[in-house]
Length: 119
Image (cartoon, rainbow, N blue to C red):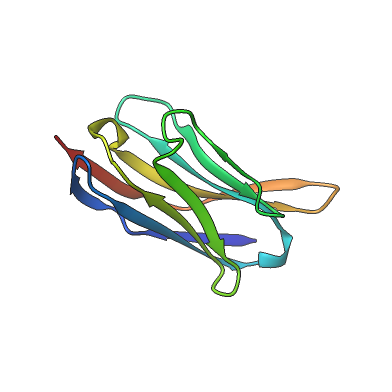
């Protein structure tokens, strides 16, 4: 099992910055990839950024160049640095870990942290 706890959300003005954190616990060694997703009111959950073993990253077009995903393996923490925030970035941000072995894969989710960007 992998447990995830997000933090760092809040209210920020357009153009501002926030850094989200996600602390992982449990079967850390089995994590294959981690990512940030978001869900705005009335919309489906969407991918924001992912990072895999070897530190390869992937970003949604809407955040490319503004957001940076990173991780600290020593602290089992995933980060999302968000700069130049826009009102359309307002959403609940969720951390996800994909873990398991070559035989199976399980996705674990955190409970989310709310980011509100005012215009």
